[in-house]
Length: 106
Image 1: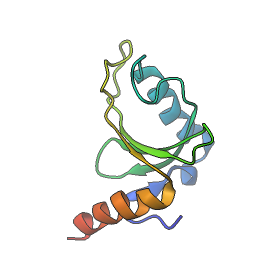
Image 2 (image 1 turned 90 degrees about the vertical axis):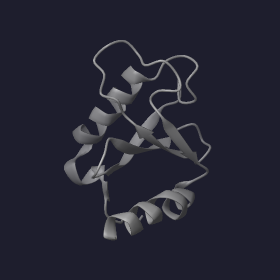
Image 3 (image 1 turned 180 degrees about the vertical axis):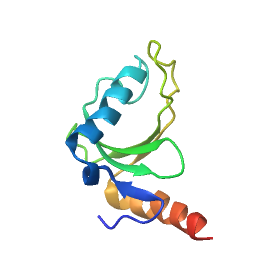
């Protein structure tokens, strides 16, 4: 994937960095949330906010942008953390990353 500002690849900082986002998501997602119980892999991070792009490891090819809350308490109540689902990475690139980049670039 060609990352466009303000998005960047979490793999650039190593697997431990990506794992941190995955642990935070697991802590925040409660029963009733669309991502509850679905294994994920962190792919990218929005440089201007707490949005993280996750690949859903359920065989669907879907990805989700999740606005992490960084709560230290028990899981958030749905619909938090807010999640925007995309059919695949290409849909994310066209429908979200390109728009964020245009806004970022001014």
